[in-house]
Image (cartoon, rainbow, N blue to C red):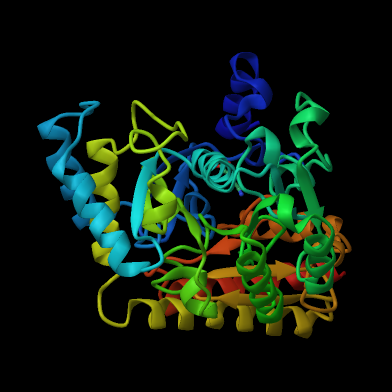
Length: 427
Ligand code: HOZ
């Protein structure tokens, strides 16, 4: 029994399942979660002092690497000025201006504290703006844990095999239509049948909560066209993809213009900042201008906003995304080659600084493909890599992330560890 095991036993006495977010519990891969003490650049150290190359990166935010010096300096300076005011600050204007510049479809921005809040608020806004109730989401997409979106959701819902959460009344989800990801025909059919009742379609343009699955351009263009035709709003959830698959997110990568965008993760650089925003005319329906209520004591928190601003500055360094993308490609190419050498059925894919690894013969296009992955083999791979000091997400239904501090040396070490692990699990 090591220190991680001891902490896990102790945690389970006072915290349900020992964790504050279910996927962290290692349930689908077995064993005790690692309790992290500190992190720097691409590395984290656990409670036993073991060092890991980190490909979770706080589930995406640490795109500059852990504890980036410039970010920490800005956070420390903000801390000295005050932790929270519950009143407006100039830094909130600066981050909104920065977001508008990077993501031009977001003419106005409202800051919140988590992706869940961004999703919940975006849906309320879409319903308030259109005066309609029905929403469309896709199987395996996850937009946070608000009630109306917890139907056939990804992330922990897939990890634990629950298609929907207990505690959500059917009357709350009766207006949520769930369609197949990457299936434009189903979208056409749904709009033909319910078009005038549909408030919005919400999508992860590159899905990151059923492992990583690329949206097909035809699927996204059909969605845009139908939303416009029927007066529904297109909400693109860029909580994972924002500032990561390209500087301007998935909407820049695909050349699509959402009506509302949700942001999270990178926007806070590791602190609780998220946002939703879109056309001015839509955003003007939110209180205090309009009748759609939304509020938060910690929204636009000055320390968190300082962290986000410093992170957004860091990612605008020349060549940042080209380098991030090249390193991510190098990782997935190396992993795929290592698996082939060992004769393991495996493939991998990446978009910008986000990637997926699949124990499947082919890259998946949706929920049904992803569900065929060999979860037992994944668990063996996960533990083999963890023993060798490489920390991937503890579930085959999560995407992986790279930071700019994942140098060639770090990636080579990962691929060497993978070569050994694949050889071991092929036996
Ligand atoms: N919902 C996150 C994964 N998609 C997990 C967040 C966490 O456990 O920190």
